[in-house]
Every structure is written in C-alpha cells, then in structure tokens.
Length: 305
Image (cartoon, rainbow, N blue to C red; front, side, top):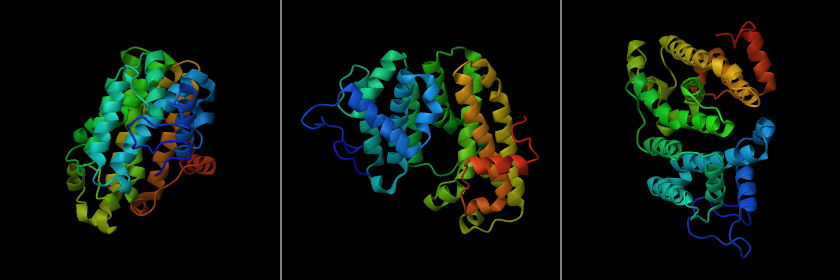
C-alpha cells in the first residue's frame, strides 16, 4: 500500500513534509476520514448522527487500528511486521504529549484529549496484532476469548467513552457484542484465514466433533463439520443476546449505531449458517439484499435472542 499524493506512506514515522508544511489537525482529520472511507465505504453514513467531533475522533481511532491490522496481515509487510507495530506503539506513546508528525497520530492526539481516552485499549489492540504475527492455532475457546478481549473489546470501550457512556453494565454489554462480532468475523473469514495458515476454531472443538485440522485446509471436512459450525454459531448468538440490552440503554445516538452494528453482525452470523461447509471456500458478503434474504430464509427471526 502506498500513500496517496501529498500523504505519507502509512509505515513512515519520521517528520513528514506536506507540501512544504507539517501536518495540521484539519489535514490529519481528512487523511483519517479518507482512510476510513476507503476501507469501509459506509463509515461517514453510519456515524453521521454522532456529530462532527465524535466522527473525527472515531475516524482517527479507526485509522490507527486499520493500519496496525494491515501491518499484522498484509503480505507486503512480511518480515517487518513486529518492527512496524513497535514503531506504531512508539508513535502512540508520543501522541500522549502531542510529539507526533504522522497524520494518524496528530488526529488521534486530539481525540484522546477531547474524549479523555485511556491508552490501554490501544495497547491491547497492538498486543493482539502482534499475536497475529506468530500465533496461528488456539487450543481452547477460552484462548480465543482472550484474543477477542484484546482485539475487539477495546474498540467498543473506546466507543462507549466517545459517547459518554460509563458503568460496568455498559462495559459488559459492549464486550459481549464486540466479542460476538469478532467471532462472527472468524467464522465468516475461514476461507480467507486458512490460506494464511491461520485458524481460530478451537482445537478442542475440532477434536470434540472429530474434524481433523488438515481436512479444513484440504477443503474436505467430514459431515460433522456442520455440527461443529452450528455449535460455534450458537455460542456466538448467546453473546449477541447478552449484549442486547446495550441497544436500548445507550440512548441517542448510541442506539442507532449499536443497533446497526448488532443487526449487521447477527445477519452475517445467520448468513454463515446458511452457507454451511462452503464457508471454507467462499466468504459471504453482506449487503441490503443479502440482509433481507437472510431475514426471510431464517424464518423472519434472525434478531430474536
């Protein structure tokens, strides 16, 4: 990935001139919003009800996480992943005092200041990305949940902070939804992760359902794979249900955002279930038409806990 004209490559960490000037806050915010929109085409629409400063803060958070995730995953960073993530963390620490020049961290510094965002969720994300650089198997479901605690739950906690929602109940509900979304992504991305020699299905579950690991990579698992998949989907549905109270409790505009995220995640989960074992060779994609068809195919009840 290369930087666009006038923008730095995302792995550049030294002071970067921009048309002879340093990166100011407005240009940095535009950079982050452009990056967010390029990866997630509905980013401005989904968050438009939250107000400009919240959207700009969340764009900075998204840009931080997106680039770090790319370092851990994208082929072009092979051999430099840990070094780049370490440099990204160094920039994060510098951003606490504003001593940064990269536009992601210029924007993130203001977001952290405006919404009193703690540094710990960002460090947790980087820890999860580092784990992705070396760990490709998970023995137990608890191991997978520990990864989700660092790879997904921090994003929800940051969102709560930006929305001004505080309390143990909010945190617990948000963590359940974020973990459910991460698990849904794991099951949705089986066809993407397997070629990368990465597997998030717990090995203890594969043994329980007599599904050899090698059969997944060969694309010819036994019929019991369908039972395994249903088992994992049921676990994930339970987590979505545990987080459901957040929707009503979050008020406006949180209820709009969390409802869209929750229903979208549930739709993808049901789509994975409908696809069955072909999930190993084809990643299901969700759009408005697919969501409607999924709703109909599941008897009109995909969102009911």
